[in-house]
Structures are given as structure tokens and as C-alpha cells.
Image 1 (cartoon, protein in one colour):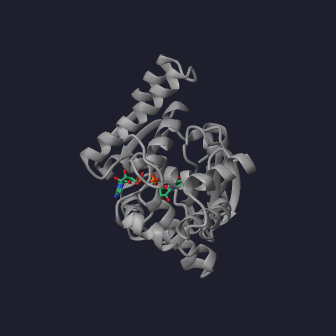
Image 2 (image 1 turned 90 degrees about the vertical axis):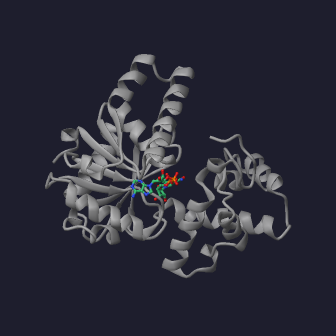
Length: 290
Ligand SMILES: NC(=O)c1ccc[n+]([C@@H]2O[C@H](COP(=O)([O-])OP(=O)(O)OC[C@H]3O[C@@H](n4cnc5c(N)ncnc54)[C@H](O)[C@@H]3O)[C@@H](O)[C@H]2O)c1
């Protein structure tokens, strides 16, 4: 299958990332079915996509007609079986290996096209582990988007030892030619390229704050004003989600056993307390509820 043949996409999960992936796919003219775990989560995902499309209209990036036709190409469901006719499915459920393995087992059973590509948006779980949960590991690949998906162009394309060159080529062309993304390739190592570099920096900022070395505001201001970063590391943790930041750090630590990847206690305590950042209204900073 070539990238230009792909018309029917499935997305599993419609949180921060799944909603963004569904939105850019629908805006690119693809037919999109999104599977969520229950009706409330599906509604929340749909509302998230709508808010983002409305923001696109308000800022003049999108016409009302483009928004309405994107909405017309999106369907939300709680039934994995509705992904049966998809040519590509992109999984974006929470960063939990057992859950993702379960999703891939399910997709392998329901997706009928023998050439369909099963992709994961995981930040840190080996693509290989998801591939071998299926009978078609050569068609399993990592397509790692960045948050917010409609804004950030980068995609890391991650091939496992078993991903076929054809699958990698089709997935790369799909991301570039259909979604307008910029692709870099990475080996199947926890964190890939960007998070392997970014996460130690984020964790250092948490340790710096935890030790009383500097305040959250001063750490963030330091990196924004001193290094011209668009946002400081603690605000970035809040944007990513502290649960996701923790899960990625744990996977990196598990993989490399390097202290620089070890999650600081403050990050674990905040996640246990449900202070997950922007998505819950409070992390290192407070936010109006999304
Ligand atoms: N947040 C980021 O900045 C970021 C960036 C790149 C990649 N990722 C990766 O994307 C994935 C999703 O992260 P997120 O930030 O969107 O998380 P999130 O918590 O915002 O969303 C996860 C969604 O998955 C849904 N879900 C859980 N189990 C499901 C199932 N069995 N079927 C369907 N839906 C299910 C949940 O209801 C939730 O809506 C993770 O693997 C994460 O590592 C996150």
C-alpha cells in the first residue's frame, strides 16, 4: 500500500494527542474513526477537537467550511470493531505498556485489511513490544507526534527490528505528504531522539525546584529569557501532563538505568495527588479547567 492510497484512518484514544491526531487527519481530508474507552471520554475527545477547530476559525487559519467538512469526516465510537475497515490505525492511549499491548492485540483481531499499518504514538514504550502483540509486526511502526499536534510539525518515525522497509516508507510518506509533517527517524529506544534529550532537562528542573534552589517561576523565566525557549521546563511539564512525563521518565530509567532519567519524588507525589498539569487544572501552575 502506498501513502496516497490511505483514505481511512483510525485513532485509538482522544486525549491530548489522539484528539490532535484525529483533527489533523480530518483536516487533511481523511475519513477518521476515533475509538475511546467510554461515552464520556468520547464526548470529551469530540469537544476537544471542536474547541481546537473553533480556535482555528477564530484565528483565521481555517474557514468555517473547512472546519465543518473536517467535522463531517470525524466519527467517535466506543467500539473497537468499528476500526475494521481502516487502512491505518494510530494508537494514542495512555502511556501504559499493558494497556497498549491489549489495544494492539485487539486491533490485530479487528482490522481486516492485511496491508493495514498499525501505528503507535507512544513516547517511550518499545515499538517491538507492541509489534509482537500482533501477528503482523512488520506492519507495526511508531509515529510519534508532538503536542499540540495541529501546531508542531515534527514526527519521529520509529521502526522496530521487525518493521518492514515498506511500512516505514509508507508511514513516512503519509506523515510528510498527507499530514504535512517533518519526519526524523529514530531507532526503537525508549525516548527516541527528542525525549531522550528533553526528559533529563525536565527532570533537572523539577529537582532544582524541589531542592529549593530556585522557584518555578524563576526557573521558567531563566530558560525563556536566557535561552529564548518558548516556554520554561516546568510549564512544559504541565503542558505535556505530569503523568505522561512520569511514565516517559520511568520507561527511560527502566531502559538505560541512568540516574539522569530517575523520576524525582516530587513528580511522583504530584501524579499520585492528581496534579497532572493543564489537563487537570493544576500542576506546577494553576489553570482554568480545559
Ligand atoms: N502529552 C504529550 O505531550 C505527548 C506527546 C507525544 C506523545 N504522547 C503519547 O501519546 C499517548 C497519549 O498521551 P496523551 O497525552 O494524549 O494522554 P491523555 O491522558 O490525554 O489521553 C489518553 C486517552 O486514552 C484514552 N484511553 C485509555 N484507554 C483506552 C482504550 N483502551 N481505548 C481507547 N482509548 C483509551 C483515555 O480515555 C484518554 O482519553 C501516550 O502514549 C503518550 O506517551 C504524549
